[in-house]
Amino acid sequence: MKKSCSLLLLLTALFLLPCCHLERDYDPELAAVLKKAEANEPALQKVINHYRYEAADDLKLKAAIFLIKEMPGKGYQQYVLEDSNLNNVDVNLFQYRMKDSIRKMKLYLEQLRGRKIVYSNAGFSYDLEHISAATLIDNIDAAFEAWKQPWAKHLSFGQFCEFILPYRTAEEPLQDWRKKFQAHTGWITDSCRDKNVLETTAFINDSVKRGYSYKHNGLFFFPGCLNLKQLNDLTGGRCEDLNMITCYWLRAAGIPVASEFTPFWGNSNFGGHAWLSVLDTDGKFVPMTSAYDNPKRDSLPFENRLSKAYRIMYAVQPTSLAAITNGKETLPRFLMDKHLIDITDQYIPTKDITVKMEQIESSDHYAYLGLLNGPDWEIIAWGNINAARNAATFPKVGLGVIYIPMLVRKNAYRFAGPPFLLNAKGEMEPLGNSHRLGTLTFNVIDGAVWMRPSGRYHLTYWEDNTWKESGISQTFTGNPQEFKKLKQPTYIHYNKVPENTLLRLVYDSILSRNDYGRPVVLNNGSYHVY
Image (cartoon, rainbow, N blue to C red; front, side, top):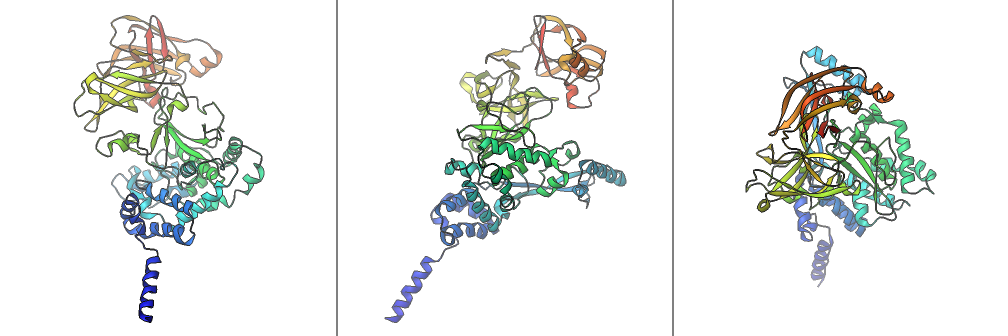
């Protein structure tokens, strides 16, 4: 009898013990993620067991499972400093703190070695394989404390998981930041008890402004995201770096915040931009510029023109092109992220458009819209192809921008039709090969942003999917900024210019992206710069 009782008690105890593979019986998707973690699976299982048994908190358990299930693919790119012969350069450039010192040391090392030095890809570090149980548990516990703050109480659990809970903002190195930041948020709670979400955000951003600023030129050679120490040593960084420090402070204080970006501006030659957006109590997101522009309702914190905007979520978004294609298609780089949602219509007027496509093949499933940014057409949006109509439909396209339809085949971009202007009314104006010629009398004030103070500019035009030289070149002297300031018109003239065609005034010696100029369209004697 005693032996039977002992056996029964032993079996009961074994049944009640937390099993390291217990979650696989409940959630096949989670089981697959845990298996993918390989050697780090015990650490992730430890987090699950902690909230299932030790802390016994169902909501925190759900949060832990959310973080782990959506963790695949997240991490950061590692880099090593090498010279052009692939020899390792055993120097930490960031120890020189100031960006100018970093640049000077880089130049000194290049002169010393007689060859260029660059940061080379050293592999991607996946969170799933490296994050510790302590990091996740500390992050979850501190995030739930932040949820109690007055600026977070209105959040649903789903909103909390996306905009407070995540332990990273982009692809910065994995860091234990949450508890450290939260331990020093007393200055925020003491000063902002009676402030709303946006006022509190502005208070925090104003503080960030005093310690950090935008510093790009000295960091152009470093392709990765800074860590906190590097950011503090430099007292600033690029937009993604500033977003990191601001987002950390906001989430530590219980401010729900998302990371957003545009791959390329619609009226600039210098790439795109990344910013943060705060979820207000009315359910609307309000964008801000970290360390610069505070959030303001119904206002964008940048002057350049948006054509597309995307929000980076923590969870995989089934409507993202990367999730839809699931590795079966060659995609433009930024669209390979499964966590994107298109938010363009939340910020600017947009139009769903259908564009006629040329040379569609049976293997083409998706089409793209490109816009001019610097020397090249850059992909900004995607759409579904309707082969029966030889057309593609693109949703939520920003107005007042010139686009061109494109395809991607064998890792190469192909043009699939002529460019067109999507005007302010949402109408598509084709920019074809016009035989009507006119005179372009270009006021330098209109090119003050991108034109040099003096020099020779030649006219190019778009025809048959390439830029062609008009053979016309003009020289002017003066200072465009002064012309703009004094409103003194200064002109350069071009004769026999094709109308209703895409034009560019290009500097004779290309020294920067701005020397390619911006698109110009001449129509009935008048022109417009885009």
